Image (tube, rainbow, N blue to C red):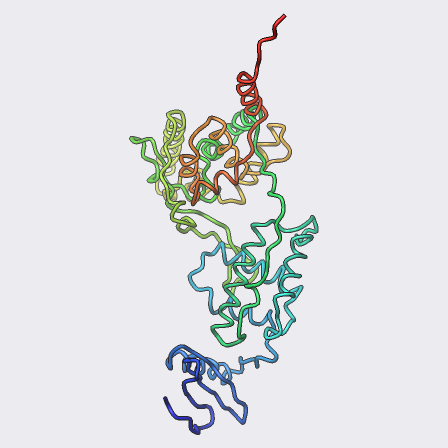
Length: 394
């Protein structure tokens, strides 16, 4: 055991506690702070980091550090490597939901009851537009972020234990997923031909691909011989966290969210023909413009090449399509729901549908798409009733 002893101002002491942890103390102008670690190196690293903050005037005493201040620190220092889309969500949770409600609470006094009340309130009436509560999925994502941030607060010796661990997330009914019925689907397909890139809608209905996956498609992702498309990337518009461009957004192209999202999907003969026709049109445009054509390899390009579509412009196009089709209440993501529902209605194996959609498990697929059309239910009732019919004797 390293003996205790005096150290110079700012150096503190280092010793091993009875519980096996190492404690490194920092003493500056008579004030003392303790930092703990499983090893000497870990404890000293925490002490040195705090000392650096004190020197720069950025250190906040634990008795004064608020939850909001800690979340800002965590977001700035401990979210390296997290996907841009997830960072945008975290920023929204912190600044849109958490800080306005409980951000002023001193971090060391934050308890499970306070967090439980916070989540209960968000479940009942947490939407920023005032139209009801947050979904279970949003609450879970917010809870996961909270856990990450407060686990780090424990590791950084800001708090002794994580109060989020005792929170029970509210349970509610699953949101209704908008699915186009067969007639609506036919109208949407017909209307999509009026758009230069209406093919993106038809491809979504044929494959169940996500919006960002479709926007990021390149011609190299299409195998015209094997009749397949491979999902290799996703394109998103996210908030820019560059200090020189505050409150701005930017386009980010990255890998799919999960390994399951990286997948190869078969294409129908009709879809292959549509893609061939589109490639011919774009090739003619490229030939016409010559050096003025910006060929970046994307499938959905403007007449001048480059990237034509990102989620925001796709949504605008979809609104025009459904308006012409006489449909009022649908969004682009409903095309993915529609594909999955048609596939399950056609009695395709759930595992096959799961693989096409890029879900992590069959349970996710079945839990998400439990609805079927009235026509399918009627077919089931008719088939089942045949076994219960009895001959009426006269």
